Length: 245
Image (cartoon, rainbow, N blue to C red; front, side, top):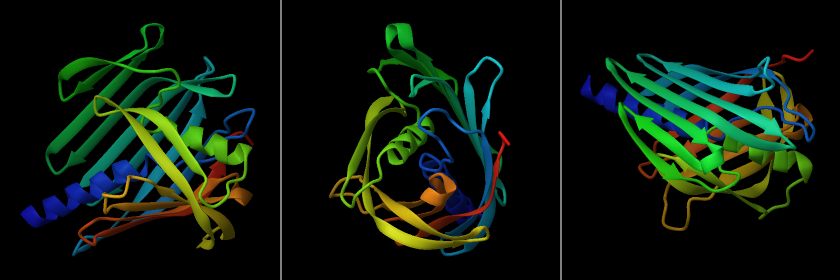
C-alpha cells in the first residue's frame, strides 16, 4: 500500500503539472467554450490508467471558468480558474486546486487583488500575501495565454514563450519553446500537430512535450512527461465538444 500511495502521489503530481499545459480553443477575438475528455496512462513501475475532463464555460457576468477534473484509482484532482477576458487579455480572479489521495487531501486557493497588484495564497489553512506584476497568470490560465499566442502567429522551431505565473507563493516564469511538428493519431482522426516543449533549464532532467492541432483550433491532442527517474506519463485526447454550437 505504501508503494501504491507513493506512486499515486507521483502520478497525481503529474496530473497537476500536465494540466498547467492542457487547454482547448481560444480565438483571437474570443474564448470558445468547450468540453474535452482525455485518457491517461502512467508507467510508475505499476501501470495506472484513468481519465480527465476539462471544460471552459462563460458565466452570465461575462467571466470565464476553466475546470479540470481527473481520477485514477483512489486519487482525484480538481482545478478551477475564474478569470475575465478583456481586450484579448486574461485577468485571473480566483484559482482553486484540490488533490485527494486515499484519505489525505491538499487544498490551494489563490485570490487576485488587481487594484493593489497582490494575491492572497491559502494552502491547507495557512494564508499569506505576495506581490504580482501586470499580466500575471495562474497555473491554469497560462495555458490560454500561450494558446492565444500560438493562434495569433504560427510558431517556428526554436520560438520561445515566457509568462509570469503566481505559483506556490512565488512569482515564477514559465518558459516554453516550439520543438517541431508531428502527426498525432486520435479517435477523432489524424492531426498534424505543433510540438511544444516546457523549458525548465539546462540542469533539470524532467521533460514535458505538448502537441497542439491547428485543425482543431490548437486543441491539445497529446502530452508526454518523462521524469528524471525514467517514469513516463501520457495524456491523449478522446473527445472534444464545442459548447457554443
